[in-house]
Amino acid sequence: MAELTGSDFIHDVVREDVEAGTYGGRVQTRFPPEPNGYLHIGHAKAIVTDFGVAEDFDGVCNLRLDDTNPGTEEPEFVRSIIDDIAWLGYTPGRVVHASDYFDQLYAWARYLIEQGKAYVDDQDGETISAQRGGYGRPGVESPFRDRPAAESLDLLERMRAGEFPDGSRCLRARIDMQSENMWLRDPVMYRIRHLSHHATGDHWCIYPTYDWAHGQSDAIEGVTHSLCSLEFNSHRPLYEWFLDQLPLEGAAPKQREFARLELTHTITSKRRLKKLVDDGVVEGWDDPRMPTLRGMRRRGYPASAIREFCTAVGTTKNTSTKAIEEFESFVRRDLNATAQRRMAVLHPLRLVLDGWPTDDEGQPVVEHFELTNNPENEADGTRKVPFSGTLWIEADDFREVPPPKYFRLSPGREVRLRGAYLVTATDVVKDDEGRVVEVHASYDPESRGGNAPDGRKVKSTMHWVSAGTAAEATVVLYQRLFTAEIPGQRTGEALDDLNPHSREVLSGCRVEPALTDAAPGEVVQFERLGYFAADPTTPMLFHQTVGLRDEWAQLQKRKG
Image: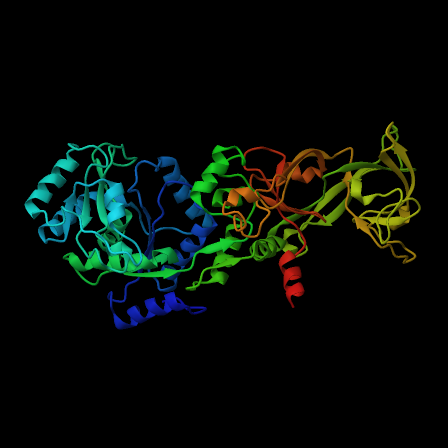
């Protein structure tokens, strides 16, 4: 068994079973998403838990696609789930489907009918739902509850053969209509749906419910510990009841629940996320503002940072919402250690160095400065960045009339150009509307490398890009997709809190030439600006990943 770095109630349960030899010392988990959408940050927590527990106990974790609802499931979602799990860094022991077990589930359903534990109900879903009662309200037994087993078996076969229309009949477990646990009030096991299935085609027209398929699939696979999110806590008695009725070989799987992961300014409801896509609020499921793993990947969040954050959150029994700033601090820390440094100007303003030398043909001399790729990792080496007498600087880095405590470039003020020279602004060129479009400056040729030989100090260092060799890029800036910390808390509808200014596209940005070689998906640090990810498919398009400022640390200071 791998050395455990910590302890929580999930690990304690598994450890006790291992030590007791409950499953012969074996540990097997599973991650069972329904392929009806893309995985999101909440799923990441479950993935890290399911695969992590198996890894910690030298066990195995399967990926099981819970494909019991053909009306919403598609092969595209199956492929995306498999790909996202691989991107997060996990390899399933096997990739299986609940539909792989449809024959066995059907055979066990017949067995329960024979044992007097299930029956076919001729009532529609609305009637059945009303008869279940509610908390503090008794349930009403179906008039078909005592139907002879032979009759239910015949009807079930005819349901399977496609003789009846959707919703006209269902198979229900016969448990206790007066149970305080609503899930035990004769739950539905099979419903009629004349729909083609992505894996089984038209072979079936009755499909098992989640509660009937889930625990039994665990048992068929040999799962030892079925780890679920907290909303399935009330399902556990039903999970255990089904398994208790069946002739299983060996110990039944054990279900345990842990709290979901929720982030501020974020929603994980598949229905609402789908609406954002369908209504064109976002570009798609991989929009960098989306909490899907596809969106986070495109935005540049490292898989390692997601794993570390989910591990740090841990498995608890109490649901809480984590600050998105805390999550971003994990992203920032990871990228700080790995991202290459580059210079980019998002709002270009031309800076002309008067007196810059020219060559024999009258062309400005191009120098090269050697700059560090990543000060956190010496092995990343250096790069040569071209420099000439005409540069691009950020428009915000110059003020003709500087406000108080403004230390960047202004008339008569000297600043340092990163790794290059000390320069002093001398004049400006304005357009017909009076806007500054060009700044002229003198430079100190003795300050090559950015330091004056006489030791004089400057209060500001600015990044730049040489105009003659700069590449043009499009950069997309992002704010929170939702303005409220808890979307929908005020009105009851999360989409009411959408931020209409969550995305800003900047065209005509100027970047150093090295960025033309950025690999698809590569994340780099734009010096002084933040971390940005190269789009996976569109060259010279960069998505803002996260800023440089540690907002989480600032929040913690304010709380202290």
